[in-house]
Length: 240
Image (tube, rainbow, N blue to C red; front, side, top):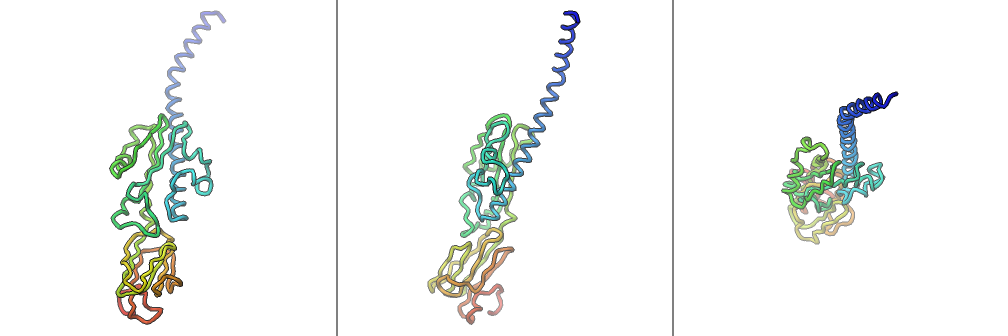
């Protein structure tokens, strides 16, 4: 092979690589984006599983490993390109506790975000409902390195209505008792997570409930001290 032939071959190879490389890079980027989308879905499923089992939102992503997401903690907080992943609850429900429940008006905010960027640190600043909505409504399809998973969990909440019609009685929600001490119980009307344990006791101080169940649907009970014993908590409005 002469020097001229060799130089010509190198020129052809260089031109070929210049044509092929951008296509290869796009394919590689698309593969990385698809993988990250799948990983975020896997993590989101772990968030929901954790919520259903513990009746609380995970405070940080690493606590999902390994029971709820089969990845090491470091891989939960960092994408394959080495940039951080972010997890954010809607600020209005960040302090949610199953025992106290969620106000009806907040059900629309039972949402979380998973944010990842394969080209840089996404560094979202989500501290207010408005900033959460900005990221929720962001069109990440126009900026392919940015990948956002939007999680909704409103379907896991059910209404519990507890209404006193006279003094006395007690109840417990998620093992947190409310005693009347012979006075009027507070009216309770809030949303609680699927599986939350509810106990209704006719005694003024909560001890052994006459009615106990795990929440599986919207439910309502009223307490009437004028009804005979064991029939003072009623699921229906008609007589005891």
